[in-house]
Image (cartoon, rainbow, N blue to C red; front, side):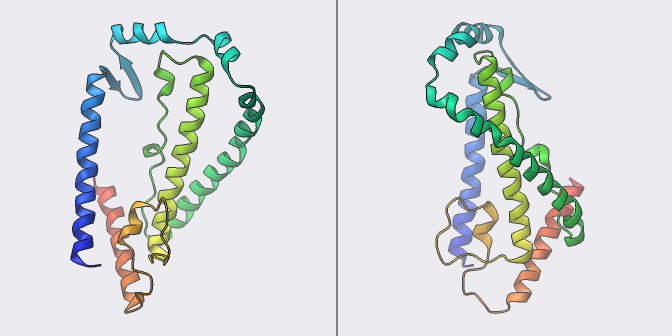
Amino acid sequence: MNSRIHQILDQITALEAELQVAIEHQEERLRYTIEGKRVTFEQAIKETHLKVKTGVFHWLTTVRPQNFLTAPIIYGMIFPLILLDLCASLYQMSCFPIYGIGRVKRADYFVMDHQHLAYLNIIEKVDCMYCSYTVGLLAYMTEITSRTEQYFCPIKHAHKVLGAHQRYAHFLNYGEADNLQEKIKEFRKRIAKESENCTNS
């Protein structure tokens, strides 16, 4: 990978850090505190939230009919999602130690905090928690598969890949055949070093 690409990747990393700081400043203006897993708003904000909350009965009368029709399909997906969750967790618990890859921390990807929002009714909270679980699961799966890909096949595709994981940008270029096995070994050393750093931190 040439120095210009390295430079751009470093700039992206710096901008992501800057974005995170900006988001944290915005969150401070919304006046809430995080205590463990619980999010607490100032009393004045909480009272405002309660005033704009839509009651369950009124909410049900405003929902489009097609939403009711598709709800069983959407919520029926919970069964394959849970199975996928179990399989991914079993895979990394059994295989990652053999490869020398650090296990992905599940808790880093599953954030369930919408139930603390007073302006959501019980149905909206359940909907939000379902979406949070699904999005978290897919992010968790992406990190597991990206570590696996880095170990076995850290090679980019010839065609553009939409939504590529963060490791992908550092992979070998398509057609870069020189010293392939040695380069793959370097990728494996890198991921093993990551695992050691996570264990020590």
